[in-house]
Image (cartoon, rainbow, N blue to C red; front, side):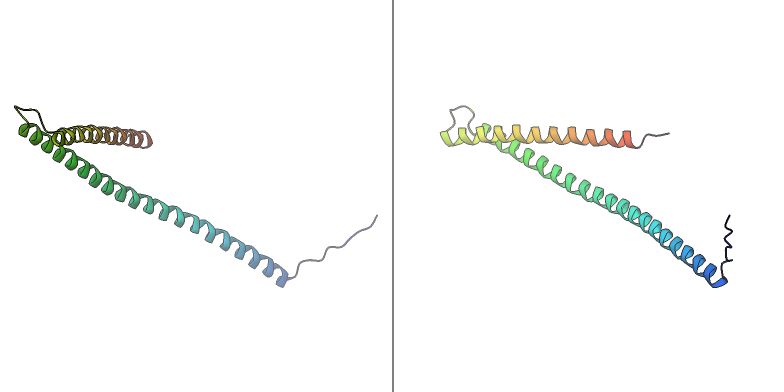
Length: 130
């Protein structure tokens, strides 16, 4: 049987080991802090993007509504102008174009309303009240 004597670690060796562990711990703590900072920044950016999206979406919706209202007024005026007689070919074409545009814009508004309802429903699902 062979007996091996283990040498006691020297104080400088222990200090070096402890310093290495502390240094590694500092790196890990720094990395974790960085991860939390990235998450916080991502949440802030996401919140800002939501605000921008809402502003752009509401502006676009207002523009579509304005275009729809204006086209309805134009069509009503064309109908008034052609009341009591057959409209000219140009007036008839303009009226058909206005009717098609009203139909298209009305569908766009319905689609936007449906999308907004889905977003609200998703938000309610993501953030249920307790």
